[in-house]
Length: 407
Image 1 (cartoon, rainbow, N blue to C red):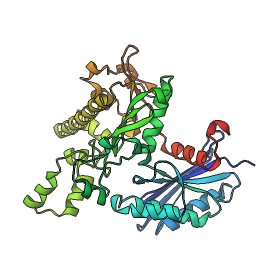
Image 2 (image 1 turned 180 degrees about the vertical axis):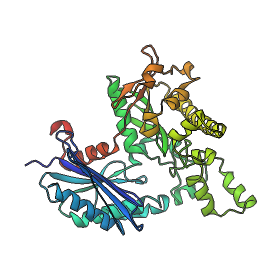
Image 3 (image 1 turned 45 degrees about the vertical axis):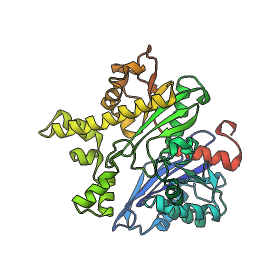
Image 4 (image 1 turned 30 degrees about the vertical axis):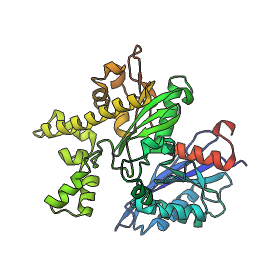
C-alpha cells in the first residue's frame, strides 16, 4: 500500500488545528481543532470525512495532551499515526529566519535553530516547537517536516529586506524584514497564474491576504520580491487588532508622555489597535454592518476608510515595485468574502488598469474566480487560500520526491 497521506499540524499558543490530506486524490479524511489549551475547559472538534463531527469538552493542559487527543481521534477512525497510508507529518512553523528557505525534514539541529529564533517570534515558535516535539515522540517512525511561513519571502532582494538602521546592530540582533503568511502567498500566487492560463514563471501577482491578520506581497514570476510584514507580523496593512505601519517614534512618545511600558505598548499595537482600536470591532463583517446601521456608523466608516486607504497604498506601491502587474488576488476571510472591501480597494486605481465588475464582485463562489471586467488591463481575482494543502504538498514532495501529479 502506497503511503500518500500527510497529517498537517498547526500548533498555536492555545490551539492545535489539524488536517489529514490524501495527496493521491485530494481528499481530506479528517480535520479538527483543539482550542483553549491550558484553560479550565478545552474544546475538541473532530470531523471525519462523510461522518458527523465529534465534539467534547474537557481539560487539555498542554500541547502534549492535545496531540495525544488528536492521535486518539484519528485512531478511532482507522486513520491513526501507525497507518501504512501515512507518509509524513507536516508542521507549520511561523519563523524560519534566513536559514530556512524551503521545507525541511526535522532533526535535532533544525529544532535547535527554530528555538534560537524564539526571540523574534516569541508568541509562535514556542508553540510550534511544542507541537513538533510531541508529534516526534508519538510517531518517531514518521518523517516530520517543518514548512515555514517566512520561507516564501526569502527571495526578497536585500534592498527590500533591509531596514535603514545601523547594519552592525541589525545583524547582531537579526533585525530585518522576514514576512509571514508565506504558504498562503505561495499558493495563491500560483493559483492566480493558473486562473489566467499562464505559468507562475510568466506572471506578476499582487497577493492581498486579508484575514484578522493581513499582509500583501509582490510576486514577480513566481518569486516574492516584497511583502508588507517585516521583522514581526505587526508591520504593514491595518489588521483586526494590529496597527500595521506606524511611525516608530510613537513608541518613544507613549513611553515619555503616557508613561507606558514597552510591554503595554506591545499589547496596544498588537491587540488593541487595527479595526478594534478604531471602532471597537475586529470583525470586518461587523464593521460593514455598523456602517449601514446604528448610531456609531461614523466610527465604523472611519475604520473601513483607514483599512482601505492602506490597502490602496500597498497596491500602488507594489505596482511600482513589479513594473507590470498581471493580476491582483484577494484571499483569506476578508479578501474572499467582503465584496465592499475589494471594490473600495481598487476604486481610484483605474489609471493602473484596475477595476471590478459589480456583478462578478458581488457573486458568491467557492473556487478561484475573476471579478474584473473582461476588458480590464489587470485582472482582479478572488482565490480561496489553502495553507494546509500547501504545507501538505511541500511535505509530500520532500519526503517522497514525488509531486501530487505523480501519485
